[in-house]
Length: 368
Ligand code: PMP
Image (cartoon, rainbow, N blue to C red; front, side, top):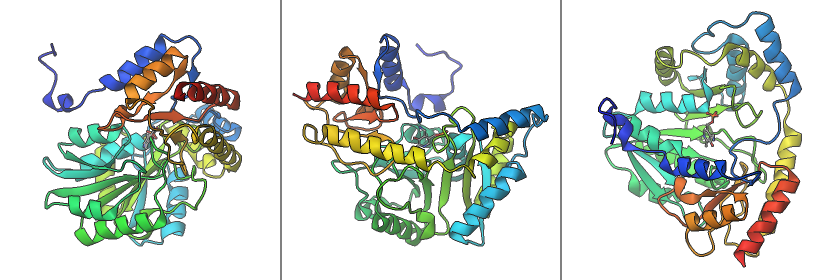
């Protein structure tokens, strides 16, 4: 039974899959937890100090809707230096998620088709439906590469936008420069919008990060400090793209999120000047550790970024395998949360090395 007051737009998607995992996790005592979608390092001290100082200095009121100049001007300078697009503007959103919500609400009309890639970040499908759009998923199994010809074939007169994410959650796979250029040029040729979710851009281990905005000036880039500086609870994200689209998102932000928290924005300005290279190097080593620990026993694509790896489940069912892992005190996430398929599972290696070692030991045992 659903309550008669609940609006129809909330019924197009559910969160039962994730809830099931949370319920299982709640019953576990001190699990080997390789399920978490955030860094295991803490916010840098200088960034914490900046937030505390901002609060003490009374910077506690509403921020400007588009973001405090201290942060926004620094972001704008970075964006200008990277892209040199005359019309590219940035605003500060309430996390990357806030940026995604505003971007989709600003672009998607009811019935518009939105192309994204399966497996996908959980929020994408729900947000597209919330905006009244129709999700069109391009299956990327088994190696999770972007096939630009398949994207071209999926474009119809109703296609409004392509939603793209690299390094990707949940696979950790990074698109190649050729794939990114192809996708960016296709979007430009076919006059569809391209949203690039770059929240893992710092976590790119083998090749330099490339944004599709380099090849397509109209690209809307969503980014934030949640993962790069472990600030998931602080809600600081940002969006850059063509000025008119950005102004529309700022207008919507005024009547929804209002702003990102002001003290966190002062701290965000410090975060932008805080190198994270050591943490990134540690995550590259953890990536190697987990990949090498599994590659001889699992069918698995070597991830080039983020902090996830997405192996195929022995026995064929991701859900059944995760149940077995949980019986062995290992918490991982079934792939069907991120996918139409239930064949894989997601490991987050954002954990300390001894946890990772214990996780690998259980997974090796379960593969046999
Ligand atoms: N995009 C992707 C691909 C993510 O994995 C996440 C976080 N799990 C987000 C966006 C949302 O991040 P934020 O905390 O900045 O809202």
